[in-house]
Amino acid sequence: MRIGIIGAGNIGGNLTRGLTSLGHEVRIANSRGPHTLADLAAETGATPTTAAEAAHGAQVVVVTIPLKNIPDLPEDLLAEAAEDVVVIDTNNYYPRERDGRIPAIEDDEITESRWVQHHLGHPVVKVFNGTYASDLLERPRPAGDPARIAVPVAGDDEAAKKTVRDLVDALGFDTVDAGGIDDSWKQQPGTPVYGLRGSAEEVRAALAAASPERPANFRG
Image (cartoon, rainbow, N blue to C red):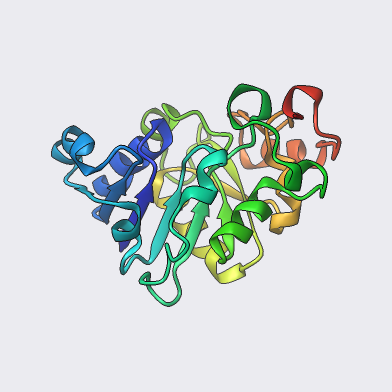
C-alpha cells in the first residue's frame, strides 16, 4: 500500500518505522523540507518528500502535525491522492501548551477532528492521538496476546474506518470502534482513554466513562 505521512515527529517517525517494516511504500514529509529526513529515510527506506508529493497517489494519508498548523497545509493536498484515499488524523488540541485558542473548536463546540476534516475537505479517521509514540515500536503484540493494547478509532466513513482498523491490527494493536467524528471527543486529551494502555474491554469502559466537558487544562 502507498502511504503518505505528513509530520515526522515522534508519532510520524515511529509510524514510518512500523509501516515500512510491514512492507508498505511510505513517503514522509515535514515542515522543514525533505533534506532533513535523510536519516529516517536511510533507516526505513521511506522516501522523503513534500506534503503534496507525499499525498500523491497515496491510498492512506496520515496527518500528524501540530493542530495549529493544519490550515497551513496546501489547499489541494489530496487532489492527486488515490480516489478512495483514507485520511488518518492523530492530532490533539493543546491550546495552552502549543496551539493557542481555536475559536471554531471552543465556541462552536466541534471536535478537533471535525475541524481538521473541514480544513482538509475530506473525511478523516481519528486514531493514535492518545498513544505513546514509543509504544508504536515497543508494544506491538500478535492477535490474541493478553498483553495486546487496544486503541479507539473514530470516523464517519465505515469503509475508511475498516481500512484503518486493519492497518492498526497489522501494526500489532487491537481496535475499538469509538463512533463517528462527532464522538471523537471521547478520546481527546483529558479523557479516561487518553494515554490508556489497556485491553479492548478497558478501552470500551474508558470511552463510556468520558465526560463531554472539556477539562480546564485543555481549554483556551
